[in-house]
Length: 56
Length: 396
Image 1: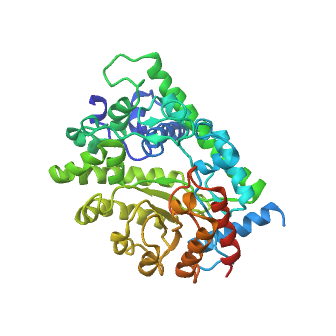
Image 2 (image 1 turned 90 degrees about the vertical axis):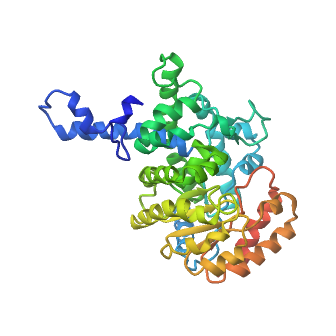
Image 3 (image 1 turned 180 degrees about the vertical axis):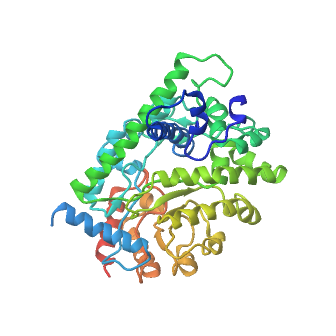
C-alpha cells in the first residue's frame, strides 16, 4: 500500500493530474488540453475498478 | 403509428407514472432476466456468457409482449467478462453450474473475506487505491498482489477486462437504440448505485463479517461507509440518463431488519445512503429503490426523502402498506409474487394483478412488474397474463 498512502484520489480519478504533472517537463503547448485528456482516460480506469466492485 | 411515436407515448406514460402522476394507463416494465432466455429459446449459459444473445432475447421479449420499458439486459453480469478478469466469486452456467441455471454469486466464508477486519483504515484512507491494490488481487485469480512479480496473465486481466467492459457498456447504447427503433421500447434505467453498507457486506467483508464489525468496530464501519459515499455518488451520476427521464437504480440487499438491527439501519445504512439520494435528486435524477426482500420496517425513513425523488419497488413486502405510508410521495412498482408467476395459473395471476391495481394504482403512480427479477422459473403464460390483464384493466 506504500504507493497509495500519500495519494489523495478524488472521486473520478486514479492518478490526479496534480500528481502526474510533477513528472512532466514544462508544457510549452496547450496545458489544458493535456490535463483534459489525462483526466478523461484516467477516469476510464476509475470506472473500471468501481464497476468491478459495483456491477460485476 | 410509427415506432418513434410509440416510443414517445411509452416514455411519457412511464415518466408520468414515475413522477407519481396519472398516465393514460399503467406502464408495464417487467425486470425480466433469465426469463428472456427461456422465451427466446436460449440457455442460461448463452445469455450469461454472450451478451449479444442476451440483448437479442431482451429485444424479442420487448417486441412480442409489447412492454413499455425493459432493461437492455437484466441478466446483466456478462460472465465472459468476469472470466477474462478472472473474478473468483461467480459460478458460471455451463462451467461451474448446469447450463440452464442462472449465474450465482459466491460469498466467501467469513475467514476468507475479500477484506480483512484490520484493513478498514486502508479502505478509508484511499478507497480507489485499496480496490486496485488489495481487493482486486484477492478477488481475481490472475491479478498479482502489490509487491509480487507481475505476470502475463496479470497484464492480460487488465487489458482484456478494460476493453471488454468498454465494449459491453457501449453495447448497451446500441441496444437502447435498437429497442427504441425496433419495438418502441424505453430503456427502463440508467446508472447503478448500491448503498455503502451493502457494498461492505456484498463485496468486502461479507455479511457475517459485517455484522461482527458492527458490534466490534462500529466507528470503522461508519468511517468506511462515509469514505465510499462520494465514489458511489460519482459512479451513479456517471451512468445516469442525460435527459433525466429514467432513474438510476439502487439494488438494496441486506441493510434492513432483520439482517441488521433497526438501530444499525439508522446509524449506518440510512445515514450514509440518504445524503447520496439527496445529492442525486438535487442533480435532477430519480432513484429506483429496488427493495429486495422486505424493507417495510424502514418506510418512515424513506418517507423523509423529497416527493418524487424515488420510485419504490416492492418485492416481498406488503405493497398495500407501502402504498398507505409512501404512496402519496412516491411511485410504486412490483408486487406480483414470483412464486405465482412460476407456480400459479393465469387466472391467479390476473386476480393478483387486479388486487394490486385496485389497491395501489387508482390515482396513478404505479408501474406493473413482478416482485423480483423474473428468472427462467416463470411460466410464459403467466407473464403474458400479467401483461395482457394490465393492458386491459389498467386504463385510466
